[in-house]
Every structure is written in C-alpha cells, then in structure tokens.
Amino acid sequence: MSQEFVPDENEFARPNSEPAAVSEQDVLLVTVVGSPQGVRETILTLYRLGFAKVGDWSPLQRAANPKQVMSVLIRRKVRSTDSKPPGR
Image: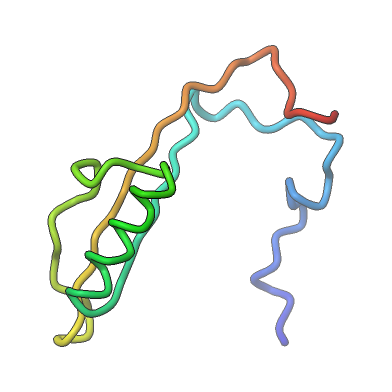
C-alpha cells in the first residue's frame, strides 16, 4: 500500500499532544446511507438510544446508488480551549 496518503503528523498517533486550534467548534457529520426503510429505522434506533432527535437529521436525499437514500446529522460542540480530554 502506498504511504503517500498517510499524513506525517497524525493527531491520533500523538495522544499527549495538544490539538490544533483551527476552530472553536468541533463539527461531527454522521451520515446514514441505505434503503429508505433502513435509513428511517436506523434514525429511530439512534433516537431510542438517546443519540439524536429524529428532527435533527436532514430529510432523506438521493444517494449515488439510485436505490439508496441518505440522511445527515450535523453536531457542533463548542471546544473549551483550556480543557483536556478525560483521563489525560
């Protein structure tokens, strides 16, 4: 496997290093792709688990495969500049 796509400095490989202060927010995108029924069931399951409200997901959109749809959840978390992750 070619190593040209592997970054020289990987934040996950350096657990004691400070994260780069690029933004004051961490943005997480969660995408569910599959059949319309499968995507709806997954969103409902994640709601039942307390992960996200059903209304927080985007409406179903066409995916690359014509038989599939997708929905996206965007989570933004304001990053505290002086806090460290638990256990560090």
